Length: 253
Figure 1 (cartoon, rainbow, N blue to C red):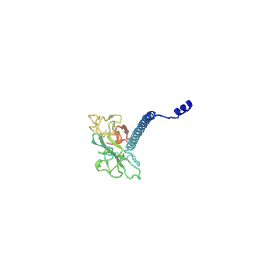
Figure 2 (figure 1 turned 180 degrees about the vertical axis):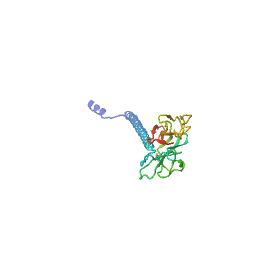
Figure 3 (figure 1 turned 90 degrees about the vertical axis):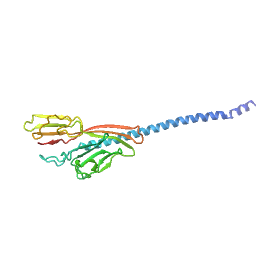
Figure 4 (figure 1 turned 45 degrees about the vertical axis):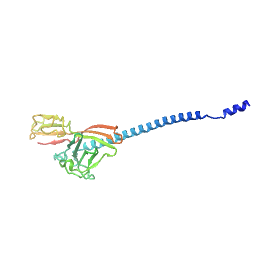
C-alpha cells in the first residue's frame, strides 16, 4: 500500500499553480529575448543607415573634387596660345544661392564622347545635389539658373543641408616683365572670386600694373558638405575638402 501511494504521488505531475508560475517565467524570458533581438535589429539598421550615408556623401565629394581638379585642362594645348578653358567665361564661377547653398560652374577640354566642355554642381532648394546636364550651357557667364541640371543624390533617403564653395587660399604671383626678379605675391583671405584682380581679399593696396606684369593664379576651391538621413534624421555627416586646380591661370600684359 505504501508503495502504491508513493507511485501515485510521483506521477501526479505539476499543480496548476506550478504550471502558471512556469508560464509566467517563460513569458518574461521570451520578452527579454525579444527586447534583445529588437534592439539588435534596430542597432544594425542604424549602423547600416549611417554607413550608407557616409559612403554616399564620400562618393559625392570624391566626384566633385576629382572633376573640379580638372578645371582649365586643355588637351590640345598650343604653345604660346591662350588657354580658352581658363578665360573669364570658362573659369570656375561661384554663385552663392543662400547661406547654405552655392553653385559652381567651370570648364575643361573633355573627351569628345562627353559632348560638352562646361560643367557644374549645385544644391537645390529641396536638399538635392545636382550636376549640370552635359551640353546644357556654353560658358560660365550663362548663370546657374539657365543651365540644365540632373540629380546626384536621392531625395527620398538623403537631405543635403549644406553645399558651399569658396576660393579662399587661391594665390596670385605678379612678375614684372622688365625685371623678372621683382615679384609680388598674395593669398586670398575670403570670398569666392579670382585672386589676380585688384581689390581681391588679401591683394596689396597698390596693385601691380597689368600693363607691365604677368600674373599667375593658382586657384583653390574649398567645398563644405553637410547631410542627414531622411529615414533617421539623427544621422548626419559633415565633410570638407580643398581642391587645388591643376591648371594655373596665366594673364599676360
